[in-house]
Length: 94
Image 1 (cartoon, rainbow, N blue to C red):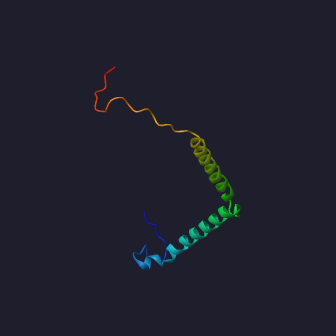
Image 2: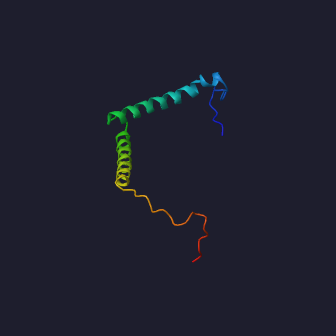
Image 3: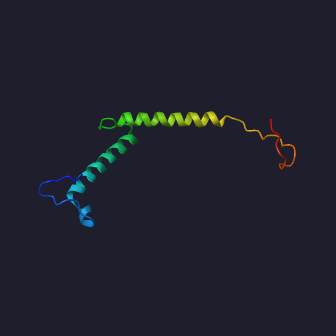
């Protein structure tokens, strides 16, 4: 579906298309928003709405991963006994 804008010839291919204002403006807005969100996550607070909530959700996921890793690290692994035979025997059917 093509978006027809008055006075705009449409998408261009190559370097000229990358320098098109219709491509640069959204890219600039997205880059600025990404930088603000990233900076807010690092600092722990931000002016953008939802960044603190996003940070709390990420931290909750990290806590769950840490708890899962810690729970499994307490297990003691003991080697099993050596099986009888040489391994080429046919297993009896039950």
